[in-house]
Image (cartoon, rainbow, N blue to C red):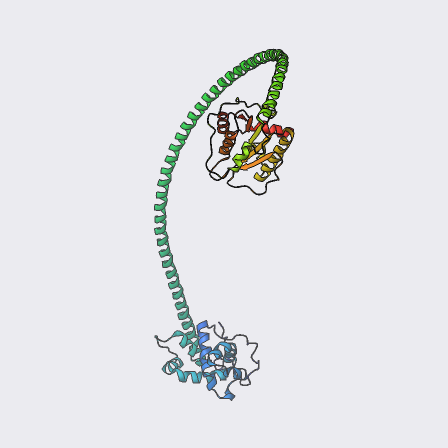
Length: 467
């Protein structure tokens, strides 16, 4: 390539007054020959040699455009001043001759050989071409071309070496890729064998599932047949049941008609019995008045249940032996009114047994309050003695005021309400009607043995609902 390049914008552009005839022109020649095309390494070496000797030239021998470049640091001089240096070497032969003199002096034997037009075979072709360009001996263009050819040969050799290295690298990578491919192929073969084995297992499972499905379908068909058979039987049984129901209804109608006749007969018989009973009670009443007058019995201030309440803290309890049966078992709720109508009847209520059956959604305090209030109404209406018993080691707080005629007891520690109820029944004299309201079978059986009348909790709840 030509040595000259455009000037750098930041450097001054001034012409040289020492311009000489065109470089390379032979004496007597017409027009100067054009500058040869320099390889890039040669051009850079020429600029470097010039930049190295530039500060050593007298100031008046340095062209004006290069005076500023001469003041640069050595590492910046060749890099930043390269365009101006190349332009001055091409355009100013005198400046080039001054630079050449110093460069040849520094080059020694190599410079002398280049001036003689010869170059040692072992010399650097770039250095030879740079010195030949500056000194321009006879045949300098051939030296530059030979140097360029050597540089190009070295470049080509470097390119070839690079290509060979890349080819070797590609071959190495290809060998590596082949090895990896062989390993992957082995893995794929193993995976294929495993997949085939799994496929065989899946096929066997599918055959088993198909066999199971066929068996299940057969069982389903059997079940459907049995279902149809059972549906037929159920239809026939329903028809038979409807016929039996119709016959039962007919028999019920006949029984109701017979019961109506029996009720009419019983009503007539009861009228006679009531008349006889009234005469008997009237006789007994007059006899009782005469007996009370003869025995001179004063009215009592305490009842038997009061003695049980007074002795409540005492762990010992006397048992009335030989109590005769005084009542018959009955669960008829309508019997409660009849029993409470007996003279001097005593009503004993199993508290929580009744409240939890009738209004268990309430709190215990609300249950007790509602039951005690209802029993107060019954005591006011009938004038009978009423005792309600609750489970509890000690008296509860928050109780409503006890209505007149109602006694509220809580079982002591270690004793249940059932036991306290049996003590109250045992304390009553033989012959007094005692009515115990509880749906607990053990309570009913216990008080029945002592002659009391056990009734279910529903009889009292209905009585309270009617009040």
